[in-house]
Image 1: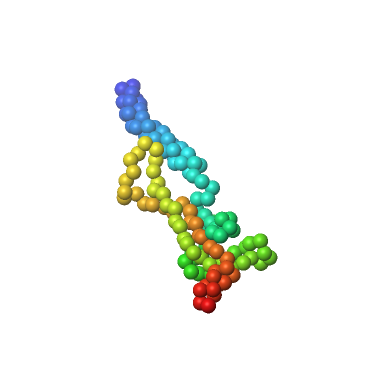
Image 2: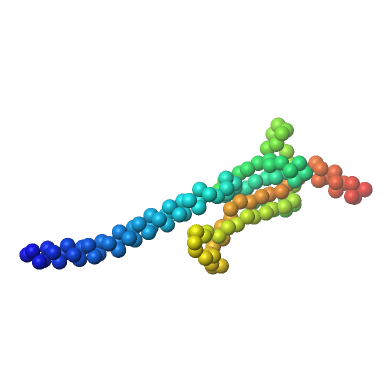
Length: 137
């Protein structure tokens, strides 16, 4: 009986050591990923509306809250210094993307790129209209 118990104890130790090592490895990887997420900028996952004439940020919206993204030439209503906001024309859209990489691992082109943030350049509609009206005269 003593030999059976010793054999069970030995095999249990042999099986549990790799499982313990795997558990520690998973904890290590999770901590690495959490450190990467903490190191990213506060604008990640956001859509920033920038007035290109005044070089001022007008609005900053979480990407998840956007039902659609504006396209170049579209008119958008954004809050501004005037009561009720103002209309702006989209003149540019810039996407910043990154690939998920862990420290110490080589980059693979097959890795999926994710959008980090989106910058939408706008200019006030009234200035845009007055500029086009001057060209037609």
